[in-house]
Image (cartoon, rainbow over all chains, first blue to last red; front, side, top):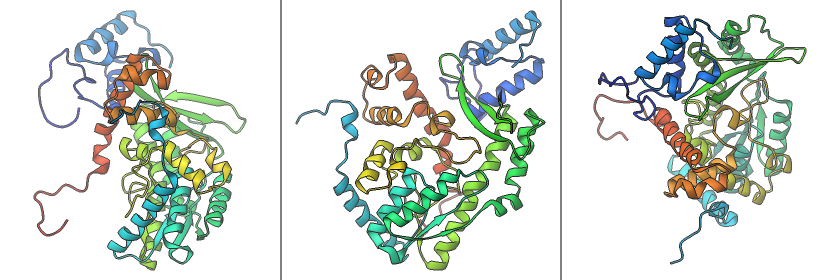
Length: 72
Length: 327
């Protein structure tokens, strides 16, 4: 995340609120993959999965429930 | 007053008048900098070719030095095109191979080490490039590393942040070493250095800070790429340069600018940028670039996003407080 320490709500869009840039998304994806031991496929790189804290939580839960990590 | 209708015609340029205007501007502003002439690095691409021609018109052969600065990954065509341009526009030039300097500073070694994290077999006889990709809807961008083995087989993998940044940082040595040489020659001759970004590159931050982004004068930074091509034809730049698609000339595999950085080919990006700069509604832009209204809106959003992301590239060093009498 760039800049100051402002609080963000769990449903705030990272894109619309300019919270993270394209390099930030790369870092976010690496962080989520490593932290939750999942692999994110190219098809899953969409705002519905990654563009807010709530979306990430839902996505990670779904991935872990499915228990499979697609090959990249 | 008749309002101008939006369309490709908005980028029409009076090339003769613009050539005269920029040539005079170069003479005035290089003089203001206290320099006697200009150094121009010639890549064999359209932008540096046009800048070389403008410099030649402004200063004449005795006060322009062209530099051809190939390295290990430069295309073989680039050097011969560079020579052709220098000879056509009538300037003297030097050729300096920067590969030994890049080798010594670790450009290739550092880049290849990052590539081998994804492709352990990657060797010095392989080729590579980075391409931009985006998820469905085009809102989240990411990068893929594409490699080509000596047997011609091509493989690709999505780049994690660490390796992406490492590869870009290593390849940026190329632009920075080139600029170091440009300033060496400029200093010894008391010349100024010409920077060659067009408006699309300048506006969208498609340059390396302290690399190709560094210069004393940037004579075509106000011109859309379409206009640079028009000027090239007016200045009688060799046809193979005028008809070539823009490349980055940075990676060992051929890489177009729109597969690495821009969302659309330059003709469409130019129109989108002009439209955005002139508050043309996305619905009006859409048919001209072959997309629907939502996609045109996404192009506008991408333009703004790149401006925000690359604003730091344009910024001078930040001081705690202004130092008076120094501008």
